[in-house]
Amino acid sequence: MAESEKKQSKQIAATSMMKKIMADHFLGLDQESKDGSRKIAWCTSVGPAELLHALGFDVYYPENHGAMLGATRMATELIPAANAMGYSPDICSYLTADIGAYVKGCTPLTKAYGIEKVPKADVLVYNTNQCRDVQDWFAYYAREWNVPLVGIHTHRNIQAVEDYHIADLVSQMKSMIPVLEEVSGVKFDIDRLREVVALSLECTKLWREVLECGAAVPAPLTFFDATIHMGPAVVLRGLPQAVEYYKILLAELKDRIANKVAAIEGEKHRIYWDGMPIWGKLRDLSNQFSSLKTNVVASTYCSSWIFDAFDPKSPFESMARAYTELFIVRDDSYKEAYMEAWIKKFSIDGIIFHDAKTCPNNSNSRYMMPQRMRDRLNLPVLVVNGDLNDLRCYSEEQAKTNIEAFVEQLDEKVG
Image 1 (cartoon, one colour):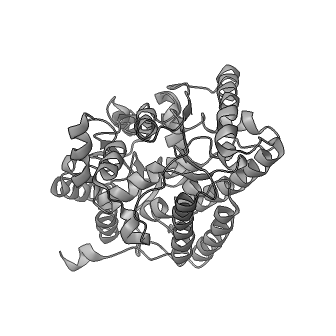
Image 2 (image 1 turned 90 degrees about the horizontal axis):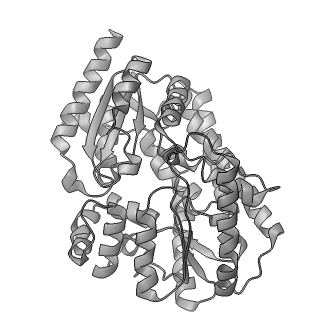
Image 3 (image 1 turned 180 degrees about the vertical axis):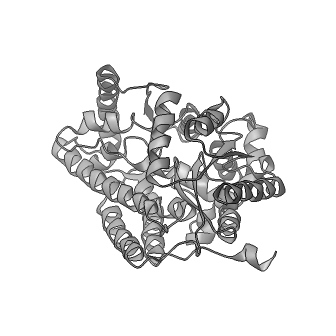
């Protein structure tokens, strides 16, 4: 590899703290799984985690494990094991990689933390706001372990979030409480839920501020940084550790902005990334963009953990609204307006859409959105074909060549 292609973005000092609290999270889950001191609930990443914490559960997020399988490049070797069981190669590769890892008896947690296996669930709780795959994914483990499976079925492809959407989801959440009380042995307490929702609100406000630091010129962080530092917002939402971490990270980023410290030295171009990360190629892509003096400063994906609607005064209603206002739940007219606002705020000069083979719900390039956004904003667009986890769907040479040509196009436009 040429020396220019090895160039990396400037490292964030708070990363060491983030790694410590993430390690503590997984090691704590492992210990509790072994000694049974606390009940463990599996939850989808944008599911009702606040309700689970309020009922005394420790919460595990298998999508986070799926991303780890992708980032460590274990996923591609494990997916065929799930395919052989009958799971289609076209469905979510988080699902197939995770179930494949379970069947094969392996996990990236072993190398990272010395943990032998993922924690067994006492109950599995999903929200279909992302896709139906999460329900089927959790149903596998419910059958495997003979434990309860409960969930929320969210309205999808909506333009505006209406009162009847909220009323329906509140009813569904409340209907889960008797099952969760029975499993946890804890009586539901509305005041405890308010406390957890207040922590989630503080976390999400700080996470928004972290991401909005990318609007500074030059930007003090990249999309690739954000995919790593969003970890606490995903797995520690509703807990004080996430709040404390983002206060420290935000202070560092604000200091960078004040001193004009750029994540990408000599930043020339600013890109918006729509769609999932390509987990197994994050480092390679980060280095390529850095070598091209191009910063991916904003994304749809990392903004998925901004939940402005949380309100401890109305915990159920605000949770229902927060988890339904998500980008992935909305129709194309909403998505295009949302993207336009971020693109203008972040001074974007090019848009990249990742078409993830096994994640149609997080791929927005299949029904002419790139062309509409190109015409709407007069910005160059590029579609990169790949997948979140299955690297057999990704041509590294093709992507590399296309990105280089795309940046050359941006150079010509500036020139």
